[in-house]
Structures are given as C-alpha cells and as structure tokens.
Length: 222
Picture 1: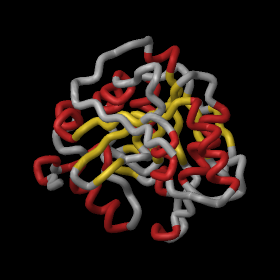
Picture 2: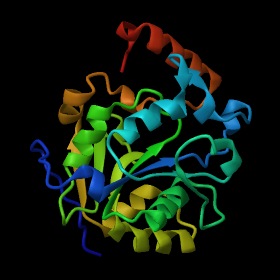
Picture 3: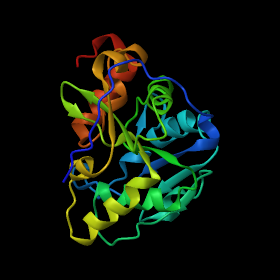
C-alpha cells in the first residue's frame, strides 16, 4: 500500500474559519483502572476540575463541543453534546471513531479528558495547520506522536471503522492509510514552551505532580 504520510516543517498557516470548520471532541471513555476507579476528568488541579479547564479552552475555539463517554450521567452539568461509543470496544480508537461519526464539520480536534494544562495557543497552532488535503494534523515531540491531542478529518472515519471491525486498536496503523501532517516540537514550543499540554493524568502520583506544577510552574521538567 502506498505510504501517504507527508510532513511539513514550515509554520502552519490558517486556511479557514476555525469555529465553523472544526469541532472539539473530548474523550472521556477510559476505565481509570490505575486511578482506583475514580473519574480523572473530575479531579481538581489548580483550583478547578480538569474537564472544566478543557471546556474553557474549547469554548473559545469551537462552536460545537462533543464529549464521548460511556457514563453520560456524570457529565450532564456541562454544555456538551454527549455521545457514547458506537463500537463496544474500550479504546482510544473507538472514541475517535465515535467523535468523527457525530461531528458535522470537515475536521475535528480531539483531546483526552485527563490533560489539565491544555493550552489554547497550542490547540490553535494545530487547527491552524489544517489543509484541505490533509487528514491528520498531529504533534510530534522527542517522546513521539500525541494522537490524543490532534486533528482528524472526516476522511479518517472509514479507515478507523475498518480497523475496529478487525479489532486492530493501534491508532498509528491509520497513519499509513491517510495523509498526515506532523507538527514538530520546535513549532509546538512556540505556543507551549514546556509542552505541558501533553501532560496527562494516569495515576495518583501523576495527579500529585500536576498539583505541584499548578502551584510551582517553574519546577516543570520535560
């Protein structure tokens, strides 16, 4: 199969009206198995719940916000379009597939629900990098790709669905079937110098560190 990955090193240019052409999707379908079964999205960092922080970023950038979850009652207080997974498989790929299904815009920005330091400027950098022929805009740092803080086009829906039907759950497998634009670390650091947007909460220790970062941001080490 033809490898359709492409990479652009130049600074992204805005090509359309963000609010009208891109939906924001928050993925809240995790099992929280390393977090003692409690909901990471509702944990408090810097004086407010993580989900509130993500919502504050999204509401300034997107007219339409979708939350993908298998436990809707926990999120009724928020002004989201709440949807549940289409495939009965617990995976990030399932959430992205579901978000694309319900999104009515050509492109959709996805974020996990456990990133307390997501920066509006970084999201804007990624969304501004969208081009009509590009299917995925994804950050790439020295640690690798960040597929849960990235933009996906509607054209990704069918390849994702085909993977899920075969129970292939690795997001990276989709990259070989669509056109990918990688945003390198030096560009990402212009809008998020410490790359804190990618800091996610998996364990109680992660949460404790996040609370320390929120009170002493100068102690950040990436």
